[in-house]
Image (cartoon, rainbow, N blue to C red; front, side, top):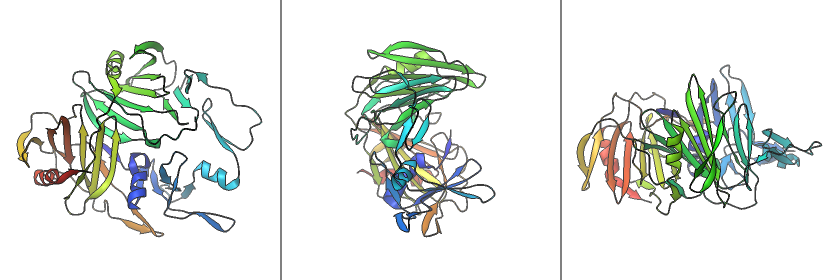
Length: 395
């Protein structure tokens, strides 16, 4: 995808916690607003409108979600765990049937097929699910693993943050895509649904571990999944789209613990109207996005090669650094009301679209420093990108 719509999973939770802004995102044919409504029980306010809550894993998440359909109908959604606590009802989850369990269960849930001591696998005609029991350990951050060597032609496209601190790295080779993430057994789950019907699976060896390699082909393309669990209970999860399964195994075989973390940077100068939106870090890579005036500026930093526009680009210099610059393929057309905040019921709401590194309306500036690769792309011109690059500093 060349453009992504702002959403809760794209980092709105971080924006809520740190900037008190509530994001609005397009969802299906309607709109989603976070923290629009509060919750009162027997006349006592339990969740105030405009505020988020703390999930069991320590993450700050929206206290409510308001969905407005095309006809203007409104539906409020609240976290099930919060409702269960307010009403004094036990809550659980059956990974085998993907069912939320409320209250006393008279019929015990069927156990999932065990694939390891911490993660349990369930296969059916619709896909594959790996779910973990909560061991009661407070994991404060995601496992520190990264791909140390990419197959020829592959480059890092983006760094995303997932629920529970799980990061995701997306790689691109001009036609296919590989996504990588890993997680401790924290009570969460991963799922893969390439399509209906039989999904062939075989066992392969990756870094001394038995791994399940699933492959699926349809008229819409080929996809594959590679997954295994190590002795510490860390689940390694690789998915490929239009990727040869052997290439997926080759990439996964370069996974190693990473002690070198890409620095998160701040910008001392931004174009008028721009401000920080989110910072994502995973697998030794980091990505920060600033938004404003219907556009965005995004900095990605990684030890592995980064996805760049075609061609060699123009050689430019800033602050003693030699860099390459690529002009945008077409001018950026900002929405007239994009990023203009609106106050509804005392809650500040903003919306907009973020252009990724492959979008036609972004210019790109790239350089290397201290063994790390940097890519600064945005819906602004060369002068503004260079000015931002000159002002960058490590947090």
